[in-house]
Image 1 (spheres, rainbow, N blue to C red):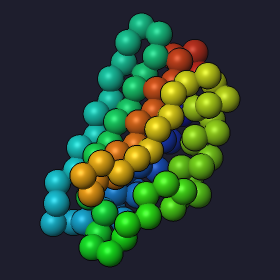
Image 2 (spheres, rainbow, N blue to C red):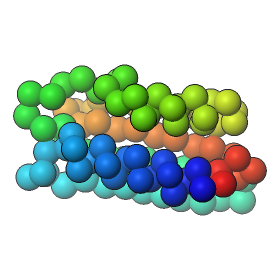
Image 3 (cartoon, one colour):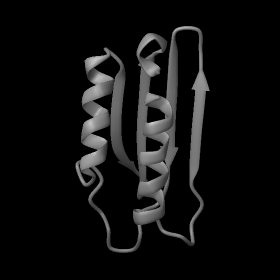
Image 4 (tube, one colour):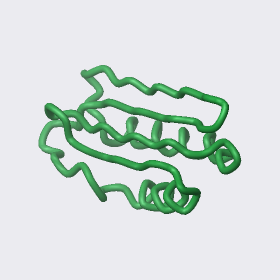
Length: 92
């Protein structure tokens, strides 16, 4: 359930915070030992806060890190770029 719930959170954030006139990308990849989710979107005009703006993401960050996964949220060329990779045993 983790991956489905996390994707629901990400798509909800895209709907609420991303610029609707710009495209977004969500990439989900699965390997034998982990699931990786990468997102790229452009925030709405004037919204330049990237890290820590969504309390839902803080919850998922803690879950990913607790499972010994990788977590990164950054701004790159004016886009919001979250990345998470979680071991399959914990991906639910």
